Length: 272
Image (cartoon, rainbow, N blue to C red; front, top):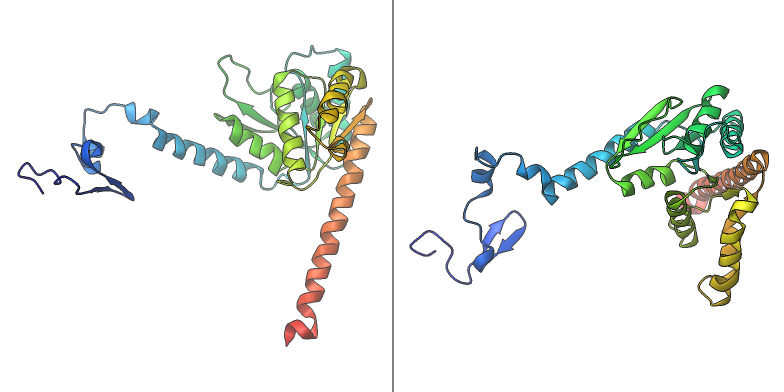
């Protein structure tokens, strides 16, 4: 230690689990900065505090959605006008999903999101909205029974994937594309259990499908098997049927695996 109370050259200053040396050594301790009256609110905007906010979003999201039960996420444009053909299609998707026993999860906004929430709400099912903080006010649509707002897109996306048994994707823009391709990537890379991803509206999605099955596949950017991750339909009933059938298959697989595990654990070899 030098005469001025600072660590000698080469000597480390321990700040929690971090070792600091030279010019990295702070002029005050953590306690001094904590108890200082002059810092104002600047600490609220530092990365360590952001980590706490991010953690709290996951905790709040998990807590709010843990008992939702079987659910399907519905994506689509926030700009779809009320009363349009696509809005009515969104209402029908939400209604049929709720009638099949699924909670309906959307981004909680207007347009297709409102339509799907409305269909679930009017059918008496659980209507869930996962909102996001944006520079412009969007707000939670009036058909949401359970709403959770997020600051961070990645925390919100985690909730869509974690609590859904499938994605139904209606016409939309960049936000819809983002959610679609993230889901495809997670299923393709086996980060999540394979679940149905259904595009509704062939005329809208055909250009994208032609591109994916054309140059993307032809240049080896994906495999032919990856094309099977997408299902394309034209009406709400087809979309919900695909979700139900795939859900039944996955549940049967899970039950078979559970039975096999139970039998293995109860066998004489396991007991011995």
